[in-house]
Image (cartoon, rainbow, N blue to C red):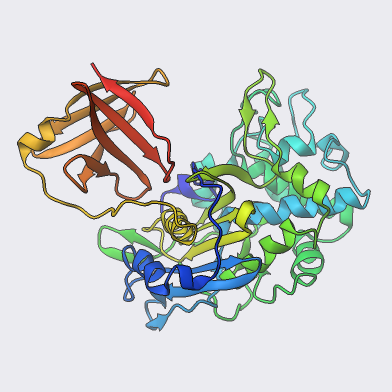
Amino acid sequence: MKLSMIFTVLAATFSLNATQVIASDIDTPKKEYLKVMRSELSKNEPGAAALISQDGEVLFKKAIGRANLELNVPLKAKSVFKIGSITKQFTAAAIMVLHERGKLSVHDDIHKYVPDFPTEGHVVTIEHLLTHTSGIANYTEDLELMLKEATAPATLDEMIARFARHPMKFQPGDNMAYSNTGYVLLGKIIEVASGQSYAEFIDEHIFQKLGMKNSHYAGRQIIKNHASGYDMSADGYVNTIHIDTSWPHAAGALSSNVFDLSAWYHALANERLISKESYQQMLAPVTLNDGRVSTYGYGIAVSTLGDYQVITHSGGINGFLSDALYVPEEALYVTVLANNTDINPQLLSQRLAAKALDIDMPSFKEVVLDDAQLKAFEGQYSMQSGATYGVVHYQGELYFHRGDENYQELVAMSSDSFFFEGNNVYIKFTDNEGQLILNEYINFSSTPHTGVRH
């Protein structure tokens, strides 16, 4: 696993359909969900567990793969995984619990709780930390720290002193830049405001309250049914690089399973933990200093799938990846937890949700086209957004790029449509009175981004 993936948000760009009602699991046979999972997972490799629920009722659950390769232990739906940055939802909700109790305000200057942390003369609020708009650097981008220091335990104050060496990236509110440092600081704020350790507060006020018996602050303790984490190397799967969980702390140190996460989000969305007003505050978009809007709220991103609105977050930590999404209109929750960093849980969660919502989805099955068929799509395309996309034929393959981005291979799935391996973006070419049109569909949107070849 690349260090840049540690605790990252795998940003979700979804799109949704507002009229479909899920009557029962009969409408989508389990074999359709299984087909989605089997297209990406193998029972003999580290894999993933998935769950689909509606209004808290489980519609589908399945695990494919191995929880431990050395002992040949299979994954089960109840297996426990490190969830990485999905932890941030719990941290943000804990802040809202304390906000409701009058122990803090999200508008407080962080120096009220961490007086010595340097902010270069700027006022940084708790809300800035929650929304990644503080300008405080992200410590997981410090490779020296991650490779050498994060393998050994450290106290919270020792870590914060180490993070203080990093200069700020921008003035608070000028931009949105993902910062794990900000969420570790939120963990410290929770401890100061509550008088409990972060682990104690989350356990007592969230896990125990909601009956989440398979969720833990994952330190060195033995956790029943916990899967081992694996990365892919040139020689095959390897045990992941060790990171001491003191370092991810409130940014990514929690472990859970698909059942607990389903209970968690249905409770959060239905006023069983915080008020409706506090929940809506967590979801609210943030207006930056220059008027731009960020759709990342408090530990939650708001996006689309098909033509539906979805609430989502992903996670990545050594040996594990995770993704979860919630469709408010249908009270539908989908989560995929993986102990294999060579797969993409977001790809699976979106496709499972699309099946449940009966969103039209292409086959994503490769077909073979000859060189003449492929070359017909070469050229530069002027998109409605003002961007320029390029399509190039090279050594029998077709490649695509947006502006200065790296080239990606286009995999044919029909004579005029192509997909990208590892995500849910696909391209369909159409002819409009002799002009070739590129239609880019992002995560099953019914309305593509379009461009004309010039």
